[in-house]
View 1: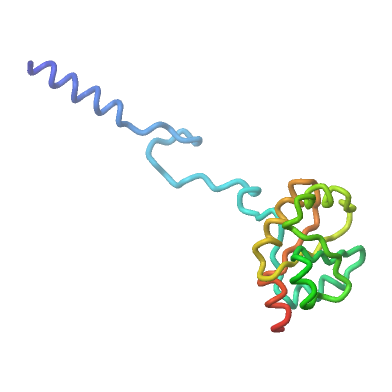
View 2: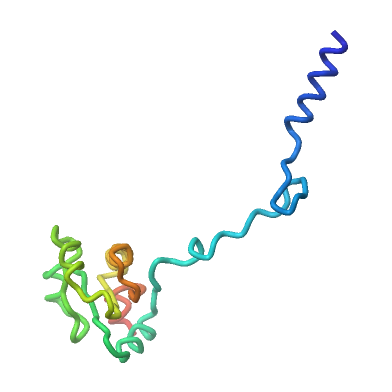
Amino acid sequence: MKYCFTALLFLSLLACGSEPDAAGLSGPGPAPAPAADELSTPYQNLTPEEFAAKMQDEDVVVLDVRTPAEVAAGKIEGAVELDFRDPAFATKVKALDPDATYLVYCAVGGRSSQACAQMQEAGFDRVYNLDGGYTAWKEQ
């Protein structure tokens, strides 16, 4: 019985031992750093001031993804309207020029964040979201 207990204790200690890490050292050590693509968001959020400055760049499309009723109450001058809630939104996005820079906004930033993520997934590289949406834009 004494030998069984000793053997069980020894096996338990072996099973609970640390695995060597990438450097060959044992022990928990620091957690590995996340990959660079895990650190970045798929698009960049801009303040109203940064958004306005970016509008001055070449080949920029300001994209309003609010509903027609919201747009009727006011919009950023020159914005192209593309309702995020339209069932054909994804199809309409695919018809856009993927080489242009898109500055996207909605009422407060939720739908435009989703629109930016969808655009990035569809292959658009330069997509920016207005943080706080049209509400923040009007307050600047």
